[in-house]
Every structure is written in C-alpha cells, then in structure tokens.
Image 1 (cartoon, rainbow, N blue to C red):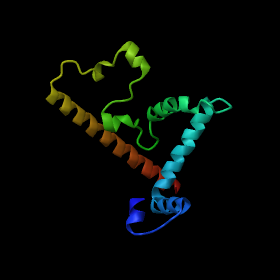
Image 2: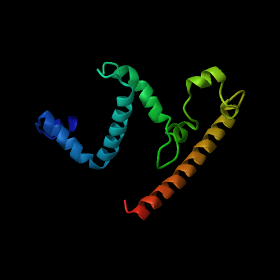
Image 3: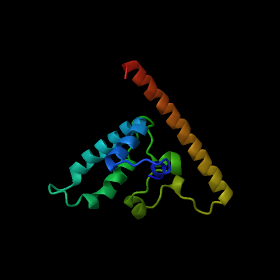
Image 4: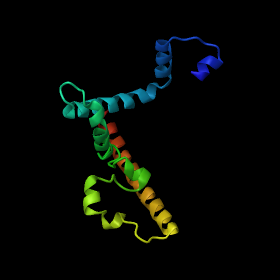
Length: 140
C-alpha cells in the first residue's frame, strides 16, 4: 500500500489485489497448489458444519510439514533445522540417539548442524535433478 501511496495512485481494493496477483504470477501456482492440498486435508478432518476448522488447522499443518516433498524427498524441516519434526511420541519415548545433543560442546554442535544441512541440501539437489529428468522425459 505504501508503494501505491508513494506514487500517488488511488486504487480500489480489487484493483490492488489484481495488481499484486499480476506481479506475483510465478508464485501463484505454488500457492494455489498448496491451498488445494490444504483444503483437501482439512476436508477429511473437519466436521460437516466446518465449525472446528480452526481447531484442526494446526494438526493439518503439522501433517503437511511432516510429509516428504515429492521433488526433494525431504520433509521441510530437514534442510532448515537439520532434523525432522518432533512428534508427541518423541516426548514419551525420548529422542533417537543420533538426535540427542547431550553434553556436546557448542563448536561441535555447530559443526554437526552444518554437516547435517550440507547433507540435506546435497540430497535435495539430487532429488530435484531426478525430478527434473522425470519431467523432461514425460514432457511436463
């Protein structure tokens, strides 16, 4: 809105929405695909009257974040956090041995996180390359 005001335009709300959708054309497909997936998942857990959608949304989002991406083969948290999502079962049973930090020095922890991130990015790049080859072979 500040950009519009700075250049002296007066646009209606609909015109602003159209303007920003036009600017962000490449990202619309990704967002719309996610919304389609999110709506489909919510439709499976929300009651018929849809009064409990706000209560179910955090759990559906957790399920989305805990699902491997089709192109990268990784869950979204792996490249960014160096680990998968923590689940309620982790609280009951404890963390897997390779994920427990223990009495690790700060420098060792940072080096370990960097190695995990680099490994995740290498794996993601490899999966993305295979996905691109599949798309090229199928003509998509």
